[in-house]
Length: 66
Image (cartoon, rainbow, N blue to C red):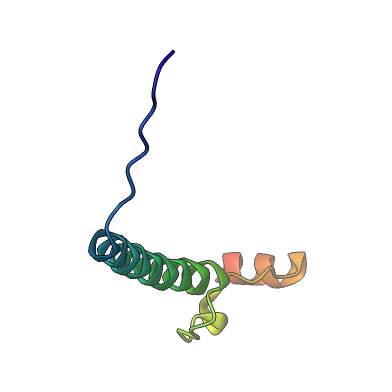
């Protein structure tokens, strides 16, 4: 027969663990917000007018002949 003795963490240790976990959760949430903003690209950088546009064939041939 084995006698397993389970020891409990002290209240001070549990409070320290709780503080560490909360700090890590806050950092993870901040990082998640950064990733979400980068993925959504909500920050308007003014590049809407610089995106490539497709021109009609006639317009493209006029440009090439110049």
